[in-house]
Image 1 (cartoon, helix red, strand yellow):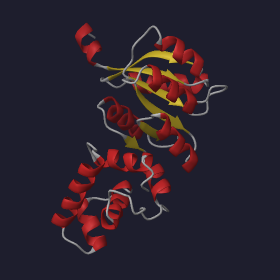
Image 2: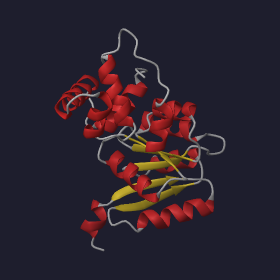
Image 3: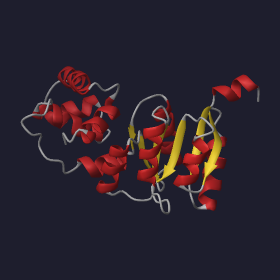
Amino acid sequence: MSESTQAARIRILLVEDHVFTRDGLRAALNLQPDLHVTLEARSGEEALELLAHHTVDVAVVDIGLPEMDGIETAAQIKARWPDTRIVMLTAHNLREEVFASLASGADAYCLKSDKPQLLLLGIRSAASGSAYLDPQVAHHVLGGVRAPEDNSPLTPRELEVLRHIADGTGNKEIASALGVSVGTVKLHVQEILKKLQAADRTQAAVKALRQGLL
């Protein structure tokens, strides 16, 4: 592989305390032509030490790290190196962990039990500047959300559309579910993105979570 090709790959710091899991993740990620695990850490403390001397694009952080957990590790990384994107990796689909991770500055939240392609999508989305929330997590977290409070920038209909977006529903299906035209749904989506200053549909859902709108 040429130096220019290697330089174009997304540089990853893998933070995972279980050696077998770490070995498997490294092997899977390095098989991708656009990804490269350049650093590995067994703890949050070790990750911070490495980042003090090296630069990466994305840190993939296990939420269940010993001592300094993944949420605190993510917060520390964002505080010191805000340009480093964070992908939180967890075995749990817990609402509290999702909110805590997003509050810490995580850009993506992926489940270990899900298909490897979703982790790859999360890493690539984070590296490109977009947010990513595992579909199972989005459905679990957004499934029972409250109606917006009076100071919400979103209308009740826009929030309803956002819930469908978080479930991975396309515009045509949303239109059918709400009894409106596809064009109307597109207008709602445009308004949601504009009001939340989001680059895409997933980022809009994540921003709404972070701002307590849902």
